Length: 299
Image 1 (tube, one colour):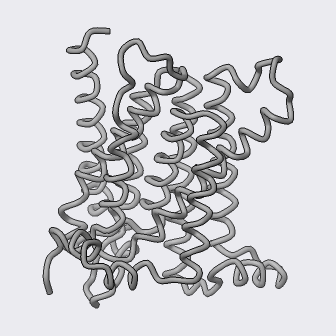
Image 2 (cartoon, rainbow, N blue to C red):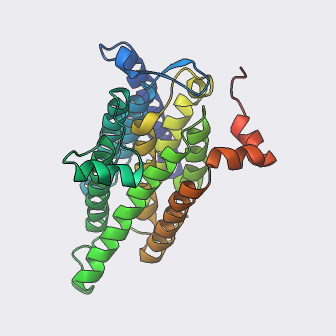
Image 3 (cartoon, rainbow, N blue to C red):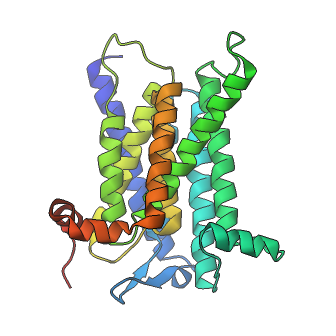
């Protein structure tokens, strides 16, 4: 494929993701569910969660379009749409007074015979992550490779699923101030969106992974202005979808070692969030604080 065709193709994927995000957010804001998606943010202003389902649709559509195999297209659709759907379900449960929070809260609700919305989200994203990782390894020929022991193949799928689910959770941890999660997504997706160098041996799904990261970055960019202005917010739905797609992009471009390193990284961030407030750390670190406030509407 010539450089011109690749450039045009990438531009089309990015344009579809950005345009799809804007169109979907607009459609959701005009729908009969618009009032149900209104929330009060940390400043007491009314914002809409329409950004969540909108960015889920836009980013996932771009990722599916950029897939270079049916299996990878299915992986992108599974990761993006499932994470977005169960995240939105959790958002809606919050509005109805769902009280179970954190691992202890979810287990406590389960012991009382009730499955919390948060636990539904965790199980949904984890299942989708494992299914998506299996589809990636199927597209790469690794899942059915008889030269690899079956236990190793299953383990690799499990680790890949953990990366997808963990990344979905991590992005959600940053969605506490306007634009913050989208900035993290943009920074994380930039290296993943770079196409592989000519002549370099790469995994069959590497191109699809690069296109997924490109779609995520374009969708985030399309939603950035209104998010920074405090007009819209990602919510669990949008943050989980973007994170899951980023995790998918990563495992599509790396092997077993990379997956283990990524899983350790996301696990460390999730564990750190239980002890330290990311918002407080950012506020107390001058460089991070300036980046966090960049472009945000001042009250």
